[in-house]
Length: 362
Ligand code: AMP
Image (cartoon, rainbow, N blue to C red; front, top):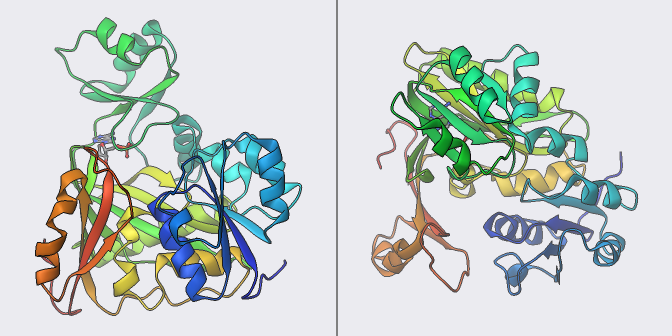
């Protein structure tokens, strides 16, 4: 498997904050980044050696991009798989199109996970109002109806209870193929981020707790305050998924810890993840340096944390508190270079470290 040595060129599909932090890490490691995405002056382009502003289906632009880099990776999982296949004929693409095919569709993703013997919420495929009625009989209420594709931060989701009008619910889905999921009575949401190298080496960050506000990640606490047995289980689950999906790169595994201490996987994201931003300050190797190592064919770095941490997202207007946040010298502030603070938009984050023997406090 080819090793891309420092001095090489890395292509990143996607131009948001994850691409920005990947590009910064790559530059620190001596690489040149070419970012490809739809936005002018994007967060990632601002810090990259080169950028192409084009649609993900623009074959001419993709060809020029592929010819300018030694490897292609991504920061956004909804890149069309055709695009990855087109690029892969010209340059190694890590992770490969198959990984995205599975993770772009909630039905394929949950089926893949269950086939590994790993638990998820109960689910059923729904493509019509009749199938919705049948699925409710099987799954029972309350339940959540989610579009199979292109949902994020709670978008494309409706909770169904006994008092819901099913015609209205189905109209809201606009006929999009969906899955109905049984409602999980969880006590905590956690995630594990795992990297896998070209040699099949695996490195997992510790499970962290994720708290959401309006369906958007608000706070990550590292580590999650869960018993050792669950820590081991969560890490085992994440490692198994990375190996079986034949990942080269990084995958974030979002999980529920149920009230009876079971672990159920909710969702996979085949890239660095918002719940791993704390690793920039808290670990020997951040998630951003780790993915660069993985896709360049280098040995993985140490994912062990040297500090506990709390990471708070700055969403929309929260970013205006940057001055106050800097008053606390222990805060590490990260801003993403986005000009407009729209509601619900991730504008930056702040990380605070705690000693390993102290619980991180929000
Ligand atoms: P998702 O887009 O699947 O990550 O869902 C967004 C959020 O909705 C999750 O982080 C949970 O807080 C909540 N959620 C999603 N699926 C379920 C479920 N089956 N049961 C309970 N809560 C859920």
